[in-house]
Image (cartoon, rainbow, N blue to C red):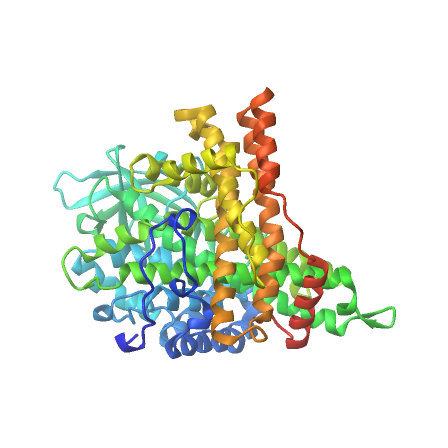
Length: 599
């Protein structure tokens, strides 16, 4: 993307700072800020998906890997595989917003989208960031064009989430020219069609490291395809390493530093998964809207029934929140990366450092997005009724394909622990003034008699719920910290409930800021769908925060202390409810009239 076409970078936000800092609408990037380049690459990716991928759906789902590989090559010809690759190695070196746009646009058929994402993200980025000039020159031009396909081999049968406890081993040959790899990797996406693998092993059983292993390397064999619940067309196989002889120059990065490769790449993987979930939900909802408009019962289209409209509103407001977070986060990353000379020595390390700053936001996108998509596809199956359970209709495929998103790129349980643990770790290190905020809110709520100042305007209720959601998180986190102190990380249920508070706060704030930005730019009438979706979603988000904070408080206090804290919680949740039935009908009418999700 030419520099002149890049959107103006918003002020650089601190990772996790949304809990503490006051963010202005003009400081967030939203889909309404897309440049001409963003819209063009979205158009290219969407047309490729609808005109070339979907007509080949039957062959892809039957795991005709030649068809999938041919489509990936075609994506390479269109530039869709090259977005994150430096120009000097045949890439386009576009911004993270563009990367998210492509991922979202290509997500209609999950089997192909998974193959695409595994190649462009976790398959390619390790080489982009950690490869030597020689490794980059050897692999990246081929990966950008689609001549070669990449895969990422981290998981093992006994160490999925506990990746650092892998059993695969490497030892240096006597002449120092090769490493001998032994072990087995499991559930490797693209294994059946990949030409190069990033394989994680322990050198001498101790140093967790990564190697680039070509498909034709002696001692590497590909196991049988897994028969999966969903994403039938995506290749998923084990890798078997049996005295696999890999040139020493294929070590990726430094010995013993493999965890940095594994986990930094996963941050972008989680960002892209959030984008894919938003796109998948958008495509699924369109199927549901079309069916609800066409299907008649009791003499009228079922889209006129209130309980169907409620499902459409749930889905549309969820997609609105999801894409608001995806592009807010992508914009934050672009702002953080602005000004880095990518050709300078040490640029890759600086890029990774700045991306790692937003690990909590990336984990939020992964967890929240995958659970939102599950909600949407479940609603769509229900809208289709009996036909939703029949494979000839799209709802069944979307439903079974969605489930895996809560497992890969780190399970949602692991990511919930990352969210809360990352925040607490940065707070203890003095990098995020979280502890001060907790103390301030604890003091405030102990002596305050009200929920806060009254607000005015069409988003007054959502703004008030957002302010109180932050207070509830800090209050619950303070109660848990007092109870468990240094042992808080061992209380996984508490950590998970706090993560739910954090996620819904980020989602709600992203909705509010986007709607406020649209109000300022477009006026009340044009921004009305965004305002309605924000107000509708606010009730759902706030209910989750209330329920989760109550769960934490009940686990952190007892007796008079518990009763006092619950009384404070009741003050913070005292608020007139929005008319979600009226809002839901309004949102449903909007998407029914447009025939798709639209703001």
